[in-house]
Image 1 (tube, rainbow, N blue to C red):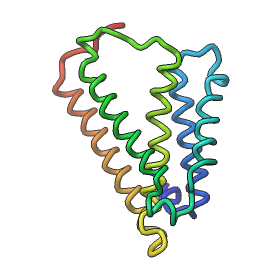
Image 2: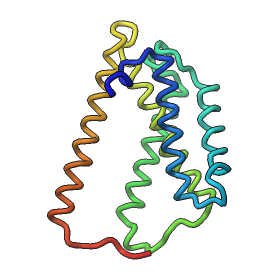
Image 3: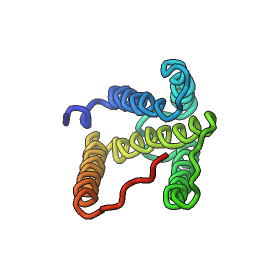
Image 4: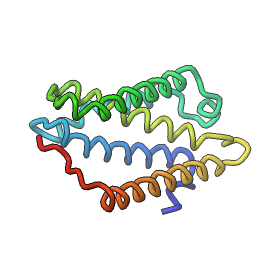
Length: 165
């Protein structure tokens, strides 16, 4: 498992792209397209386009080019919107049914995820190629611990069931 975090940078990009595409594959269940394979066309093209147009070398990533700032800001704004949507979900009693909105939600979630992890991996890359890898590992451990803690505390403390569709 730790081998993933300490891969050489080009191999890390490929492995992270594969993980992101697996995330998109799971997201196609929400999209409810006629074919999950066809539903993958938009995410694959979007990820490939972002890789084509944005610099991927560690030097550019560690100095945060303008395109990287835009990507991080897009992700941050999206997570604020997504948080508001999640908080007000039970008051709205509304489920998004629009196919393009579901695609957009997935793209706004997973493309910034890909680039933020890549930027974190590139931190101080020229000084120490594994400094960013340790940061990515630390973030993953924090997320796993928070997720596990939330699961067990929710299972033990919460008696409210989720509303039915």
